[in-house]
Amino acid sequence: MTAAEKKQLAVTACKVRMGIIEGTHAAKAGHPGGSLSAADLFTYLYFKEMNVDPANPKNENRDRFVLSKGHTAPGMYAAMAHRGFFPVEDLLTLRHIGSHLQGHPSMNSTPGVDMSTGSLGQGVSAAAGMALAAKYQGNQCRVYTLLGDGEIQEGQVWEAFMFAHHYKLDNLCVIIDNNGLQIDGNVADVMSPYPIDEKLRAFGFDVVEIDGHNFDEMEAAFAKAHQTKVPFAIIMKTVKGKGVSFMENNAGWHGKAPNDEQAQQAMDELRAKLAELEGM
Image (cartoon, rainbow, N blue to C red; front, side, top):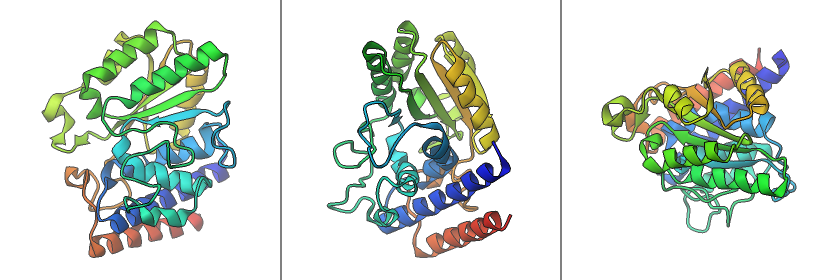
């Protein structure tokens, strides 16, 4: 990846974070913490990794993305808006009556959304089904799914992993946002999923662990995913609330929208970061 490409990804990720704050503030509801931790991943997927076309969002040969941790839709919406699937201004309608951007993704109303999600643990099963269907159809598309580290406490997740290994779904890439926090606190205290990497390998996955805020490490991980002959998993170590000082590593921001003063502070911090990145 060139320095210019990396700079552009960083600039876009900052704009995605701004969209998360603007959307949740306008909605007076939503989930900023986990959206912010995954903002770099959303940016990388939509702007570099996935074969998608906003002008033809239902192209049969497109790559598919399933947001298994559906409550972080504000982050996905922001990345999709900046990619051109719909106007950036729509982010201000998040969770409003009549808006196509509801609190959890809906494949029936939002262009580019491949699966309706929200009930934790279920999205990865849909992604595995898509990957198997692509195999049967001879479609060369790839399927990506993002889960939270709290979400993998769900039993259905591991059934889906077992399914993926059984059917040799080497076109499936599972990404786990390991920010360490869920709505009730530290994931290790609520119901520890660790060691995540060893468990995934026991289920037949090829696994890499990366810094989820490092685009070079993402690039290397996805390059490896394209070469593997078994299901692939990326465990991203991230910071919940990344990019907004008072939200970082704070479980309280899992599902709470910023008020006017907090939104202003967050946007001031992000605008300063954007100016810094653009000036590099």
